[in-house]
Each structure stands twice: as C-alpha cells, then as structure tokens.
Length: 292
Image (cartoon, rainbow, N blue to C red; front, top):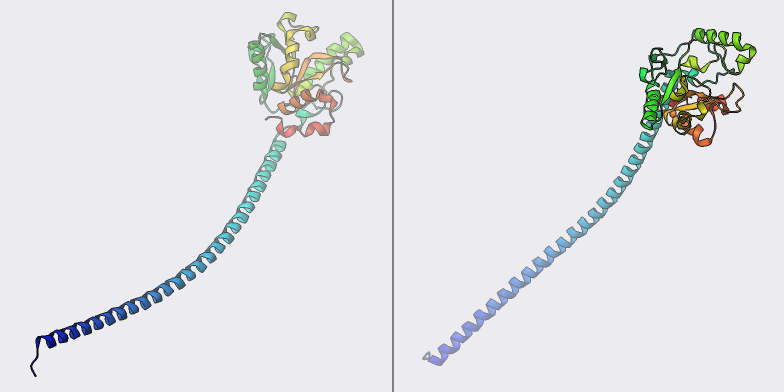
C-alpha cells in the first residue's frame, strides 16, 4: 500500500500527541513529586518550629526562674550589705565610746568629782589674738580648740570682739583660786566658785569670756554684744552656757561656756534647754558624737 501524504500527516500528529501526553505525564509526575517533597519538608519544618517553640517556652520559663533567683539573691545581698553597714556603724560607735573620755560630758558642778590627777589627754595654747591678756598662757583641749578659735574668728567677722579671760585650770590652780575667794568672801565664795575637783575648767573644755568693752571684767557681760552673739551662735560651734539664770549650782554666769559637742549643743538650743536640765544618762548618749 502506498504511504500517502495524508497518512504521514496522521502519523506525525499521532506521534506529536503521544509525545505531548508523555511530556504532560512526566510534568505531572514531577509536579506531584515536588509537591509531596514540599509537603514533607513543610511538615518537617512545622515539627521543627513546634519543637523550637516548645524549647523557647522552656527557656523563657528558665529565664523567669533565673530572674527570680537573681532577685532573691540581690535582695539577700542588699540585706547583708545593710547588716554589714549597721555592724560597721556599731563598731564605729563603740570605738568612739572606747576612745572618748567620758569625763568630758559628766555633770560636775557639785555633782561629780575630778581627782587631782585628772588632766585632759592633750592641751594646746589658745592663739594670743583671742586672749584678753596675750602674755598669759591659756590652754584648751586640743581636739576642740579649732571649734573655739573658729567661733572667735567668726565673731570678729561679724564685728563682735569676744576675748578669752580664762580656760583650762588644773586641780591645784582651782584649789588656790577657791582658797583666795574664801579668804575674801567667806562661805559666799561657794555661790560663784567651784571647789577643786568640781570645776568644769579642769576638763579643758570650759572658758570664761569677756568683751573688749569690759576691759577684762566679767560683771556686765550679759549686756554686751559679745554675749548676745554667743546666745545666738554658740551652739553652732558646740558651746553652751553652763549656769543660766535660776540654776541650782552657782550664780548666773553669762561668761562661762562649756564645749559639749555640736550635736548636743544644737539639740539643747532647739529644745530651749540647758546642759544641767538633762539627766546624766541622756547626756551620755551624745558621747560618741562629741568630737564629730
């Protein structure tokens, strides 16, 4: 049989269709394979994401626990540091109490007695420019002398001339002074002069002030600008008036001032009280801050 042009066309078309079918089948198979592979990969990725999400949740929980633990430890450390601070303060206070002469805040003036052997730990000369008589050597407790001289210097800056007439006196000097007063005034000397061992001057922290206008006298000191200035500012430097009007120890002595430490002096001033108004146990609470 002759193979006509029509037959060739049909044959070629059949071949072409077959090829197309095969190609389509292969493409579908490849697409199906890729889809299955993608779905498998996507499933694996989902599982991994789920696993990672669960692990992340675990880590978040662990972090929360660690943060809580850290917070507790920090709180413990803060408490420990506070305890250490309190202990340090207590040790510091005990050290101050152990190294501060308790006599410095004792109520003498016919109450407590200083024996003839008592001498302040250290005494230093008061600057000549602050003494009424520059030629007379006047001594004051070394540790608080700067407060006394600062008081006097500041008074000068305010236009007030306060002079030191008397400062430290030993047991023997007080004995001689009282004896001379007794010879002159008899028992009346007890109203204005302490017996030896009962004088605040023996502590080295008490002074008798005078004013330039009085020329070395004590009588009338309460009428001077010097006294007015001391009333307003003495406590700022740790000084208080020992014998105010109406005290039960001696006559009113506006010239006699005693160093008791700035904290106690400030509190007495703020409360409107005087040194001898307090019980000794109340005064003793200020001993640790005496030199602050």
